[in-house]
Amino acid sequence: MYKALIVDDEQMIRMGIKEGIEWENLGVGEVYTAASAREALRIIEEKHPELMITDISMSEMTGLDLIREIRRRKLDMRILVLTGYDSFNFARQCLRMQVQNFLLKPVDEDELSDNIRQQVEYLEQARRQAELDQSQKRAEGTRQQAELERVMYRFISSEDGNIKEVEMVCGLDPHRKMQTALLFWDMDVNCGEEEQYFRMATLKNICMGLVDSRGEGITFPDAAGRLVVVMYLKEGSDDITQQMDEIKGILEDEDDARIHIVLGSVAKRLEDLYLSYNDAVYLIEAKRAEFLNLEDAGYDPIVRPGQTKDKQKIFRDVYEEFKKSMTENISNCEYVLHAFQRFRRAADAYNISDNSLKRLCFELASAVMFSYSMNTGETQEHLLEGMNRALLGSGREETLDVTSGFLNSLLGNGSSGKESNEIIARAKSFIGEHLGENLSVATLAEIFYVSPNYFSRLFKRVEGEGCNEYIVRKRIEKAKTLLETTTMKTGRVAMTVGYNDTNYFSIAFKKHTGVSPTKYREQYREKGGGRG
Image (cartoon, rainbow, N blue to C red; front, side, top):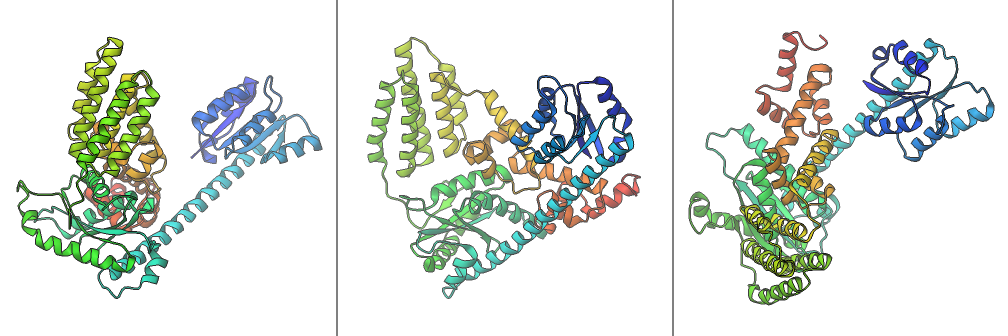
């Protein structure tokens, strides 16, 4: 059902059109009225109607001014004009502003109904075409992903792989350093094949959002049921430990699974990638006892073929310089925040461990706090206590984000818990409006200008569930509505709510409802629901 807006400064005409037309029979579910063009713009901004019927002669801002403003804002809206003017010049102005039709007052009720019906039919046809285009795009994307996975696994599992094929199908840069990571997870011994498939598909989709969609590498499964992530090394980095640590944190937050990661050696050339994969496979065998004995004090969640060079001593001197410059310029908020951003980049460049970084951030915040108190005579101990609590269990990116937030709050430009809640509220609204699209923690974090790790933890803290879990739940809710109220086939329902893989959708649906999509529709109709 669509939404319509009636704009006329005469109440009798507004209400006459609203009450005289059988809107629901025409496919219109909500009808709004406005007594002026400015009121109409406010309603358009809030309610987003697809159809507008407007008078031309209104005080202050005319109907033509209103239409001109709508077109300037590039709003997609069908427009019918009511007017007492019957002239060629007026008709030409309407055509220039892409008005669908203009009707002479007093308008005939049947004529107006016919025009509304035509616009609704156009909107419905456009919606169906958009759905078809999106479905075809997703289907093509699914085929491309399947081909990519086939080519990549064949390439890394044999030194005879076709480099040209990999370059063409996968788009990997043959001249950049890469490294392979093998991901696997604790699985209950009673876990069935369907559950294993669901877990693999879920984690693969999350990784693709964090890696593939950013152009940082490629994700695909191997024959042993493990997830393979091939990533480019960042400039100045010795390996991909930092990136994989962030990914590990997000995967565990989103799926409540304990993730194990084993890194292969760094491949300086594309043709050496199979060596990186084989190294990781051999490491899994060598470390199997540690994976089985998870309580072992020496257990390392990310296993590497060799440790990175220790740069902590050098970095300590660099850190002291940052601390000195920040505490000596405490009255200049912008300077302090800029210095912290440089510290943030330096910590990444020197490969400082997460625990060391957390300790240094708290030490830095304490030093800034002390300098602030000495300069202002004010104490803000509650801010430092709040930061200390926030750092408990925080990952690398969240540690840095929390510290930045503390500095903002202390020096007067701060963000509060209210702002955090606002980010999540906006994210939920975005998710609701884009369920059929490719949604991931990474894309949402990018939209709201925070790190994926921070966004993932923030979402879980505010909502009590992981972002991916929330997206799945909302998709299943929408799928249930479509199964109840339409005759769409399961495959079309799956694509409409954002699942390219119908099998994966069916498993996810059954996991949440206890029955398959087909069975759910049958049960709903047996209870007397639906259209029959």
